[in-house]
Length: 315
Image 1: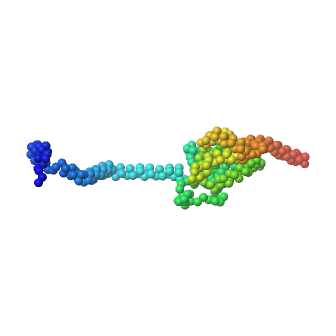
Image 2 (image 1 turned 90 degrees about the horizontal axis):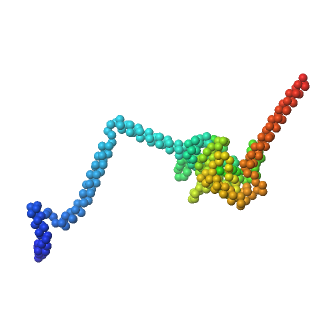
Image 3 (image 1 turned 45 degrees about the horizontal axis):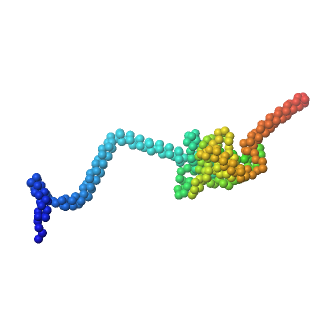
């Protein structure tokens, strides 16, 4: 038979007696029972507290919601207006297709807006035509829009882009002869970018209503390739240094360095025995045109006077 607890632990018996004297009753449970009861009751306590918190939260939300129909109507109208204006702004900035250079606004140029598209044609060694493809519906898996392919369909639907910072040899136009290496530069550019996806940063609009932009050739698994730098590396163009020139994020020094490397390697147009800078070629052609036009006018005036004199003599 086990001895009573008073013999084993006299101090415990004394503490119990003091509690009885203070409270006039023995404790309902032992310390061990208190501990076990605490752990057994804690889940129910926590669940009840969480329920009370959720109830109080829902009550506070209900109290916050206005009950006046006029206030509810004003809040609903304001929310609908904000959503509508936000949708219109987002559509205009990110999803609306830019048809041509006339659709490019001053705000787009000030923000140096980025656009994506596909090159449909190349008419000169430093120009291209871009069909703008905004939003997700020109790309898989949501591709539901297609790019026109005929000249009639593409009329007034492409952006005429002047490649920023470079100048390619001049092709024959307006009765003027082509500059040496003009055909090679044009053929190279067509082979490199026609039908390719491009990303362009719009910078300015020139006097010919072209958009000066920095085009990048899209690459799926690597960084996009900057077209102006590639043209300089391959010797297909020189750095454009006329007034108002744009050089993109690299600056003129980087572009001049690439031009010098191509020149030292005799790449592209730098392999010509006698190279004439495109700007010098254009200036020479302009001077020749100015000389030719007055002589043509004087010839026409002399022929007119001759006819008049003949009429007088005939009388």
